[in-house]
Amino acid sequence: MTAACDGVLRGRVDAAGTRFAALLAGPPPQQHRRGTVIFVNGLFGSKEDFEPLLTVPALRGYRLCSYDQRGQHETPGPDEAAAYTLQSLSSDLLAVTAAVGDGRPTHLVGHCAGGIIASQAVLSAPGAVTSLALLGCPLRVPRDAAADLVNAAEMIDRLGMRALEPIVSQWARAEPERRPLLETRMRTTRAAHLSGLARALAAGTGDLVAPLIRTGTPTLVVHGAGDGRTASREEFRQLAERFGRSAVRVPGARHNVQVDRPDATAAALTAFWAECGSAGHTPPAPA
Image 1: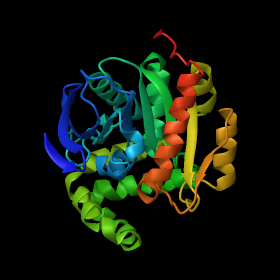
Image 2: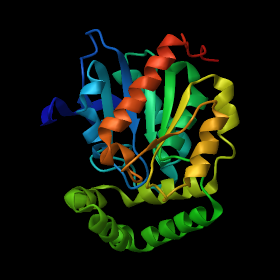
Image 3: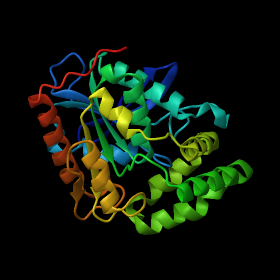
Image 4: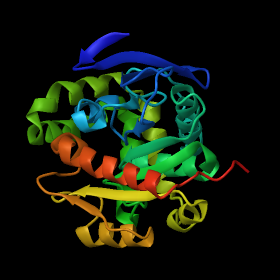
């Protein structure tokens, strides 16, 4: 492993027959820890999307892992878009969770599409998950957004990663400090990953909320006050209320709430995890 920044190590997690590139922080598995947290990034993302959060003092004592998904940035993957389904990526997540958490129940935190992948993991193996936190994730893809995803996938199939240059340039203008990362991971991520995941998201998942509620897994909704990319403030509020709690709206943050306001995001997460512990939540036994 090599140091990334302030107690964060760059390493690999061997799981599901793949070496997943990861950022790791906190006590090693053999030492006592407050819990284990796996962070799941979204479409067009990478493990670095959670790096600002991994260094927040409020998360000390937790074993933390943010990883590149199969075919994403520094993790290898196949060249066939059909390999990147919500089921396959959520299965990878469960394998990473088992490896990092030593088989013990783990907190999952998913950003945007990562929240949908994490939700699928909860539904597949609720006994492996202590809690679920959704960051900027409305747990649905509107019809117009689904059409955009299909169009993006078709362009990627025709042009490769060159198809994304305009949108990457747009993001880089909005976040100039992240330009090197945005440009680099568009070169390193496999086109098949983006094309396959975009189509999987566009195909839809149906209502995920009702089955998630039936698992009994505590679920938190967090979003930036300036996030208008995936849902409105009212839509996030309604989603959170279906889970029986209030949405956490973070002032001064946009879609990447964990990047824009890592301290506030960490405060919301740790308060939620403490609540899960004090309520004595025990994940249901695997079916």
